[in-house]
Amino acid sequence: MADRPIVTLTTDFGINDHFVGTMKGVILNIAPQAQIVDICHSVQAFDVLDGALAIAQSYAYFPLGTIHVVVVDPGVGTARRPILVSNEKHFFVAPDNGVLSLVYAREERIRVRHITGEHYFVQPVSNTFHARDVFAPVAGWLAKGVDSGKFGDEISDYARFNAPKPKAADGRTLRGVVLKVDRFGNLVTNFTPQDVPMLFKATPPAFKIVVGKTEITEIRSNYAEGMPNEVFGILGSMGYLEIAANRAAAAQLTGSGKGSEVSIVIEGAAAAGQ
Image (tube, rainbow, N blue to C red):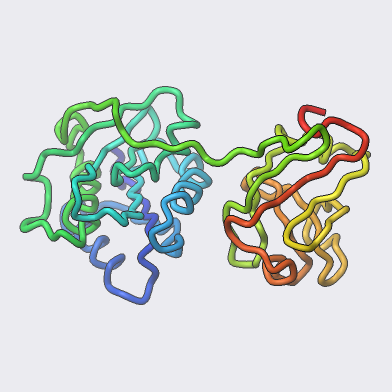
């Protein structure tokens, strides 16, 4: 382990309560040399997919050996298992509820362990704050240099889900959904360039993107390229098609939000694989 191991935190706790600070205290009490980095504490409450998106978009940018604690845990206190996931690059400490599903999809070789070494926990373990009593201390002991194999046995039946994929409605139309709304009101959809490559060509075919009652016929290369309050499509940094507006909230302008249907209609061509 590095002289100053990095521990990241991704939660739905917000910053108005003591939860995040308490987690940091537990980690530093065990591993005072740790560097703690907040990735995000504004994951939508109880939203496992939102948590999965947050960690999947960020973990790969951290140095080798980083320990990622991910806590979006609506099942806290139930029989759901705490897990430790590792590969040659990173460690992940999280509940076994699918919050690491997008990490699993991106990493070919992983080991998933059911954390059963209760002597590493803060005792007594609360039924409502496993972030403090289970996940934070495990991260601290990892940062201290305890081998990952000490925390429990490997499992293969860990929980995972597939992110929703666009589906062909007919030869010209693909239907997808809004995965999340970011802080700026951009609608992050589940369309990638692989789903609709023709949309991102230098000269795309005629198309329309329909979200709510809004029809969009422009793809912009950056946010400022659009006219004020114009709603347009853009390939965002997450790798997904976003519905955005220049200095305005596309979510408000279209009356749409997470889970809203998004349709892409390609005129005169099959929708997929062009």
